[in-house]
Image (tube, rainbow over all chains, first blue to last red; front, side):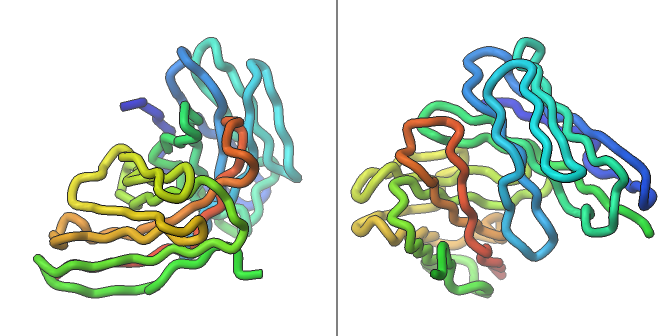
Length: 111
Length: 116
């Protein structure tokens, strides 16, 4: 069973502040690292898919970086807004197109 | 264009009863998946299917049965429900050909199952 860990489990951010959190995954047999955004009472929605060491992806105020050699990815939220409140999941892509998800980081942006 | 749907959205059942959760997708995606949401574990894979009549176990398959006679449907059956199977269940399907690990999974709205 692959070990994918996210930290912290939750964080509170003041509106306008920037924040970041971590996903760690096995550095061997790497295929892809996915990030999903999951709002309460909704379905997870894909944010990014990254495959190459050093990859950086950006979508609006949210960006992500990838280090496959050391097995971690950072997700950054710049100038957090209340609508950024959600659980952010990372998932390690493995053979057979299976995803192993981390436990998620729950972000609450306070106005 | 409904995409991927799940039914029922909410279900309450009793220990020992058989329950079937339905998943239907309109995209003709080859791959389909069933996950359960567990506190601290995010989403855990129960079963997946690469095509009609092809299914395989995920991380937590015990107590569950799946079938896939048609590409668009992927029902999940709890043969004899237990309290530990109380959870939110998500179905997902995979875009593209399924051979690239970068393909995005699209999730259904979830089924909240309570086993009393």
